Length: 374
Image (cartoon, rainbow, N blue to C red; front, side, top):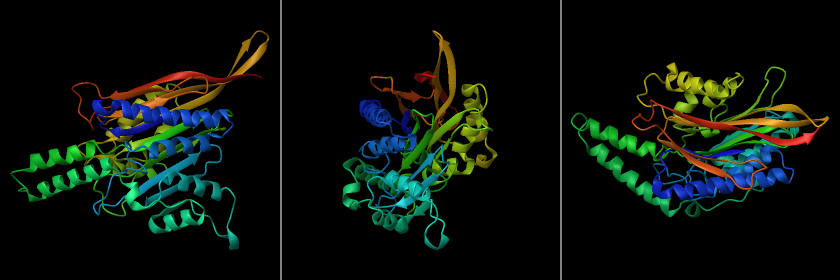
């Protein structure tokens, strides 16, 4: 499984904290998998761990909006059933991913009374009331904010006030710099991708959204095909794929990057396919032609079953490829298999001298999991 503590800017001074929360999330998901949980349950468990950290922009400690309130987005997708659940601009819920996951599981039960179609995506007060009605406890707003998110809100508010006072012509360069500083450090949406012992995949994403966003704004973390995507292998697809995105929600929504990256993973060379998808479908996308900087990142998991003959018996396993790519300054990732004793973490950064939003970094690896006698 693989987790991400956002694409944005990760300072060296907090590198230890970023890596630690990714390790905890990986461990929690793997513990679930070892206990027999399905991928969708494990990916939700990883997201809860990430949402509970004060260092992430998701759940507890999320960015505050213009009104000084926290509104969160989250979604989850099950590659086996292809069901999806999401919430947008929800307040007063500690773990938005649990609401998204409950929407997914409730939808799997079939139609409601009088033949009504169950919802898969709820927003605002309606999402909050639905969550409470389905046993998910509320969290007081004052407990959702942390000292980190409150101090960031005060800093960003001062920056906005300075920018608004500037002369439009003479100080345009400084205004652009202030805007860039604000966005590059506040795009740290969290996400995870998982494959379980049966080869099912799942993906999830959760975010507090852009700092100082307008109340009611819903980012890519809640949108279908934009925040996450998971799809088991089938007759049309040779590989199972799971993708979770991070970055500027408006850029990711307009390009449907999660689904685009998933489709690209059916090519033979996963590394080259992701490189081309990020370049052609994101950085150079005609849908973002008016943007001077295109900010985003993805974590990708691709897997397929493989069989090897060893000592007169066939050994069946799952070959897993995990990759990540981003156009932001950095992205913190963690990954772990059920065979590992502990998670590995890494803060990926753009190559020196490159420009965020115009260049990209891409890395990854391969592992063989869950070998069993066939």
